[in-house]
Amino acid sequence: MSSLSVTPPERLKTPLTVPQRHMFGPGPSNVPPRILEAGAKPVIGHMHPEIFEIMSDIKSGIQYMFQTQNNMTLAVSGTGHTAMECAIFNAVEPGDSVLTAVNGIWGERAAEMAERIGAKVNRIVAPPGGFFTTSEIEQALSTYRPVLFFLAHGESSTGVLHPLDDIGHLCHRYNCLLLVDSVASIGGAPVYMDKQGIDILYTGSQKVLNAPPGTAPISFSERACQKIFKRKSKPVSFFLDLSWLANYWGCDGKPTRIYHHTGPVTAFYSLRESLSVLAEEGLENSWERHQNVAEYFHNGLEKMGLKLFVKEKSARLPTVTTIVAPRGYNWKEITTYIMKTHNLEISGGLGPSVGLVLRVGLMGCNSSRANVDMVLAALKDALRHCHKSKV
Image 1 (cartoon, rainbow, N blue to C red):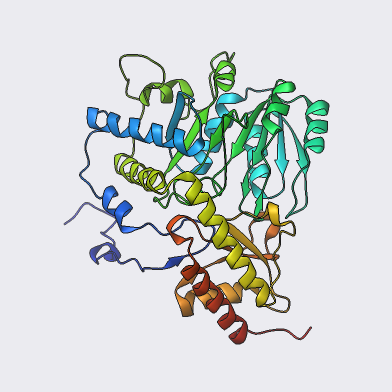
Image 2 (tube, rainbow, N blue to C red; image 1 turned 90 degrees about the horizontal axis):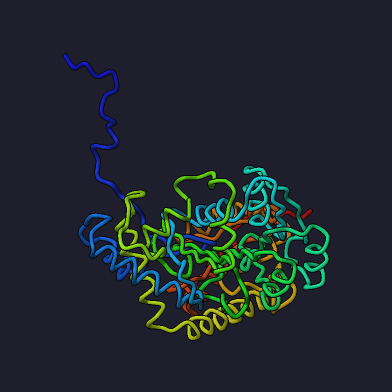
């Protein structure tokens, strides 16, 4: 008689099945066969010299993608949230003043992370679909004198692409570091980390890069490193301690790398391949493609009589489009119908945009006119078949 009180789950005795879907929500996006195949290569040790070569390739690919020469450039093992915490946990100490720009969910997330480690957090707030002027940012910097200012370049919950020019240099005038979230924008809209004076920049693997979720590129300027490595206290997280990560990624100049954690080696394969795809197309070509496809999509939506949530054209995120939820319809019924009938994912709002918008993400390999036509046809079909209230 078995001594086990928990029996083997019957479900685990059946083969794994996963449907093939058109992933046109705000992320993750579809992973092309080339990147899937890279991730299926043999597992080797996370401290083997071949892995260090792959990590070096990833580092140079991130430098290209971010347009930076920062030596302190690496990929955190985890999603974009992990990189956000890595940035905040290393750059901020208890009692530090932090300023976050809240025009969607991500500024609020950054504020909560900073508050959890004892920072004094202040917020500047814009309505969903809005953004901040340079003068508004400068006024807040002057008032609160933060050591760190957080800004989401691509606010995927509201579809806003925030201007970046002059903000980094403005922050430096007030002895403040600029932290930018580019999870929804990198590769799809121009970012020049060094030229724009960005001190900490991070993104995720699962959007324009079309890699599976689980790695998060991040880079730190020399200015940021000076503050981080002169901390009075250790970062609250051992796993995200930059001094350890810098050694694992060969960024600290030391001849020997010391075990810190078991890196997700197959995720590194996928990330390297996705950066290779971006390098082959070229950043500027990728930016142009995403912008052209977004404009084609926006024109198609307007011809259908649908309204775009972000009024100012220059502030529309080319990777994630927010559509005003059609009046009289239940947004959830629309997304459910499209998933069931067209095997296609789009989503509703997130955070402050819940109930206000539909969100469509066309990122990386998914950014094409053919996919726009597919989404437009699905939306037309849904609006014909879903219940519309007369109220």
